[in-house]
Length: 172
Image (cartoon, rainbow, N blue to C red; front, side):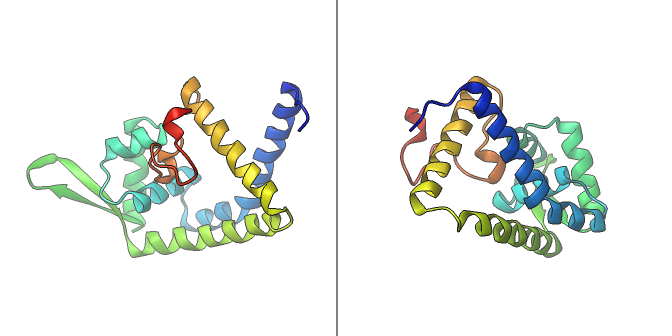
């Protein structure tokens, strides 16, 4: 495999990010506009579906967002009926956040469209190329986490960073 210069890696990274934003997220953004919510709202819904019963603080930490910002996002999501909050009897200051069926349906529709678009591209790659891409993306996210550039990237999608079906992330 050729040695890639950092400039080339950065350029390819920009192109990949642009593809994700423009191709895979186009449907997401349109769907969200119809609901009058942003992509940040969608990230909260996805996390709450992956981790039902999360607190506002847990959501803020997992998404690397400020607590007041997450509170605003949750307030809006409650207003449009996509999530619900339930208080904890033992401590009234704590509330658990859950997706409603409407929120789950929205996330499912958007997820299915993203999956369809991504698979259309991935099917054009050989199995070993797809495995290499997945491995490289994982290594990149681990490095981003270790460098402090992206805190706990695996938690953003509800994955346990210490659990890896392909190997052991904790030893990287």
